[in-house]
Image 1 (cartoon, rainbow, N blue to C red):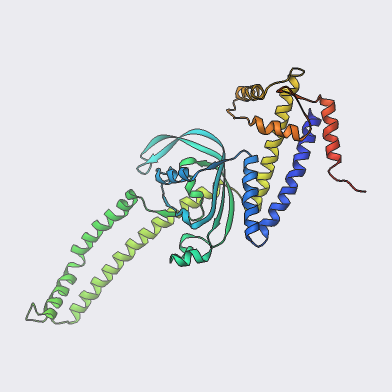
Image 2: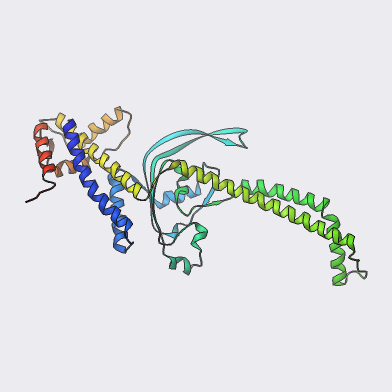
Length: 368
């Protein structure tokens, strides 16, 4: 069985190597429509072979509407993309403690975490943004740019933060936390530092519009009063602006930290990782299906019986997995290992299977 597994893995590795060469060359070439189509189709097939599940646009919209587990609010325009696919694989349920009120109390939250998420995006061309008067730089986008990224351990409610054009926005509670102190501080500054200045300004405006007959004299004391008021007002506005800017920097830091610790790969590196995962999944499917059919010889199994036995074996080991029995049977048939008789699935015995696989390996390269 070790020799059988090595031969199966070697055959799939050779196949995946050829696919990697084709896909990597298309990625690095100029992005013609043919290249874009090849990359899109090959990535979709590769993600399917690696047993990834595509996230629908409805699920993305739901994630945008849900409250994020990360204390941030995200804003994304999905129309910025020519192509956008998000695929996930492996999920688990986790219970985490979320701090509230600056850590004074915590709340337990049960969430679904995706073990691996792949995001493939192609930004629309510059003409699309020009027609709508949008500056793509404001959305952290480069027209026509293709991106491929892989992340790990992503809360499903926060999956939208992985998109390239994600924008951080203030939540209502954050607006209150910044706005209320600013209003209170403004009232204090108004009545303690700006009252004399505002009184003088009111006299000057009244005299200018003719409400008052007397015109106040702008002596040195009045000028100092006006200058002091201007400095106090300017200092107040600068402090509030810095507070707002620091809060935004804090938000961006939180987002960057979450993306940094979840990022696995980028660009061609993701292609290599996906090919390795697809090779592993394809090999496992074949070895499992062959092993269970071999154990059922000479009577064989139906497709449903094979599916049930393998899933029961996986469940006993703690894995709730939907085994793709049709895909596994098709691979066995392609490797010429399957013997089908009256709807009962049988496979070649081990010695014969090793000869067939070894011959296939020898025939990969033929020279006169």
